[in-house]
Amino acid sequence: MELEMDTFVIEGGRRLAGRLRVHGSKNASLPLMAAALMCDDPVVLRDVPDLADIRNMLRLLAELGCHKTNEGGPKDVMCLHAADRSNSHARYEIVRTMRAGVCVLGPLLARRGYCRVSMPGGCAIGDRPIDLHLHGMRALGAHVSMESGDIIVKSPVGGLKGATIFLGGPFGSTVLGTANVMCAATVAKGRTIIESAACEPEIVDLASLLTKMGAKITGAGSPRITIDGVSQLGASGGGSIDHTVMPDRIEAGTFMMAAAITNGDLVLDNCPTDALLSTIDRLNAIGVEVEPIEILRPAGWVADPLRQAVRVTSGRVIKPVEVTTQPHPGFPTDLQAQLMALLTLADGNSVITERIFPERFLHVAELARMGAKIFRQGPTVIVSGVRQLKGAPVMASDLRASACLVLAGLAAEGTTIVNRVYHLDRGYEKMEEHLCGVGAKITRVSEKEVGE
Ligand code: EPZ
Figure 1: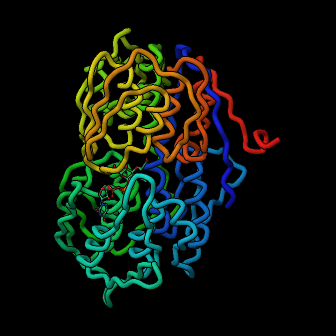
Figure 2: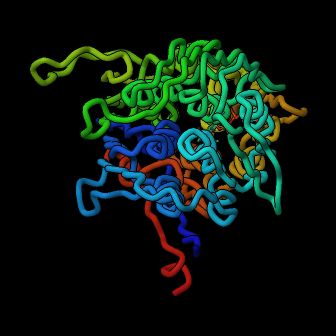
Figure 3: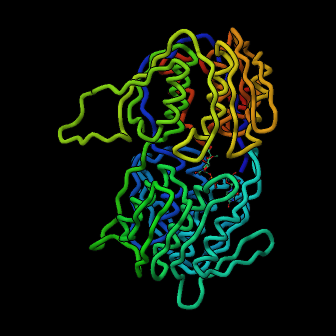
């Protein structure tokens, strides 16, 4: 698959003001899509973002016999139907470009009792082992072996059996590991307890879909999830399972920081405020206000703390802060790079410690090219605020580092060129169009144009 080496050309110094809607969450959508493999009834997912990773997951699911059946329908609605179970091999060619493809492991084992999934390999933000995923599968009685870089997992004769599983690792919990084990446990005989489960809101969203399929799950969102196995999953009384994806808390946090770094004034719709409390805590300490606002809602609307409208404004001075990334509900590692961009302009020294992916600092050297003063010591960086960033050509290396460089470009004096924005397209839907709609000046230049 040829990657488009598109580039963003950003004219900095423009204040963002206006209104943006937060899309459905990429990191919720991927395991939700994989869960469609777990039943024979159609699964309808709504508010699915239109992203490269989502399109890759559709390709993977199609190879596994689960097809999108509403082609030509609304782009943000996806009807998935796993009609063909003849192929259960998630190939290296797809999993290596999108590590999250590993989240088909639990669903395939649950429905088919067998799967072959490529080991994901590493990526720009560090090693991405799946030892905890496999520890969970073995605990449920599965047989795990390796062959030519693939993991082969088979259910025992008589099927998976519930177990008490400690899923904590050196970095706390594992999000997709919890998703995989929770999926497999829904049809394991007896009770499964996942101790030190990931508490991320995306796990709660997945548990909500599985419950609609008839799974018996309590404790999702807490460090202890209890699953009582059922014989089979499906839509009650035939028909289809219908689920709306939760809003993307990382996109929402990124937009909040875009408002802050341009001293702007943004209203965000469909904002999962309740999933962003640690982020809002740090933004408040920096001097950024995030206030829920009342907007006209359709009749019968039920207030939802994961779907609020908020107004984001900031004082002229960006105050320095300390932040350490943690598993949820701590400050999310996926917003670390974006916060760093904001703190390069703080009035003093900030301290950022990365506890989840200690190598997740590829954006530091690029920010330095724009005049940022950042000193790294292992998993910790000291960011000495400067008065102004200067536009420069910079290189995106991974999804969230790309977002960091766009934010820096919005605030920098002059022109910033962000190369390789295909990284950004993996996790942000038409970011340049949305930001231009609220005052930014960003032009997407495709490689072909650059070449001409
Ligand atoms: C999810 O990845 C997210 N991806 C990541 O977002 C996010 O950064 C990460 O959780 C942490 O919050 C999706 O949800 C699709 P982990 P995941 O397993 O589940 C170690 C983005 O930018 N670990 O929670 O793969 C691992 O090395 C992406 O949207 C093991 O040691 O992450 C890491 O240090 C990037 N053994 C830590 O745990 C394992 O078996 C957390 O990883 C699994 C993980």
